[in-house]
Length: 495
Image 1 (cartoon, rainbow, N blue to C red):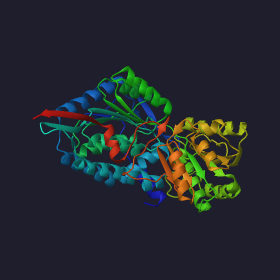
Image 2 (cartoon, rainbow, N blue to C red; image 1 turned 90 degrees about the horizontal axis):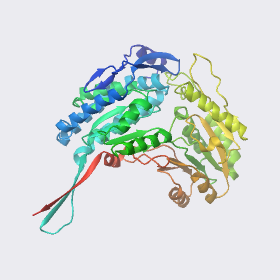
Image 3 (cartoon, one colour; image 1 turned 180 degrees about the vertical axis):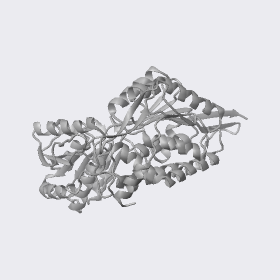
């Protein structure tokens, strides 16, 4: 759909699932507690959602563990698991407009981005992973003629997935698709800021044929439901996307409980290096704007640190400001809108705090500036560009998770690499150069899990997604994602 009125009409007909999904059915939190789910574009109430805690976690884990031990999913013939996951992808595609609206209303993402990126990516992730199930083989080790050594991958058991609010549906599929494909039971805890699409997805999973108890969804807060999952002794793997601070807490919980494996995709402060031999300045500038202002800057791989070679800095900044001016906050239900609101007032205040910090430390605001909040009108921030920035400034080092870009300069390739690596994070990086040798040299020397050359943010299900250093250790997508959710077993047979 391309018409605002049609999206509005469809949104008014939506029914929100608001209870926990445990053992194949919706149920209120054991405590009876709820939390309000709000539309950040209008500040209007959407639903009161079950606020799960330790008691609900115990129920969900018991259900997931019983389902796993029964073999109803874990021992199901691979091609049958494949068919069921493919059906789930088909159902998601059939309900794509509904899911696009759920995330747009829940966290403010533009409907155009949902329909162009999140929904197709989520469907593809489930389909691609499902197709892998019956194409992965074990190994036979080279031994003598009197022995046989078999190496196989087995499901780990119960997997807990804790997902963020910035890409609610997409991040959920990145975790649950490989975990389910491997034969595990999964408990998904979506962010309390965007739980609605995960609850609807659970309903579709049952419709697709996933047995009761194999896929559960627990809405709730990190300090209650998330902590209980991290400490539970029957959770064997915890997969997380979110802040570096919370990632560290989850590792501590694993150490305090059963040494569960913890896979983390944490914070980012990605650098974008623009060399003077960049072939198309306007194209690079448009990409630099998209890399920070898409999804309101609420993107873990956002290139929020821009380093421009000094000889082209003035030309590049002019092109950048022009490209950035095309990003205007507006109604996320309008297909013409390319920036929605921040997810809530707290995130808007965080953006304002870092802009103030940038100005206090000597930065010059070239575009945008402090948000002009009006009560009841949504949590909108302006696309903001700050020049005269350097790595000693707080807003250059800390993840903001908002539409604020730091513009720095460099003179040599060696300096650019040093500046790019001068960060505790290592999720992604972008390099713009027409020199193939330089592209290889710089890509190898940048300490990050992903590097894009003459582009930003591209990729598909065939390549892994994740970072190094304080950006985490796990990898979503690709065949490597399946490794996180399986145990490697060796069987040595004397013949």
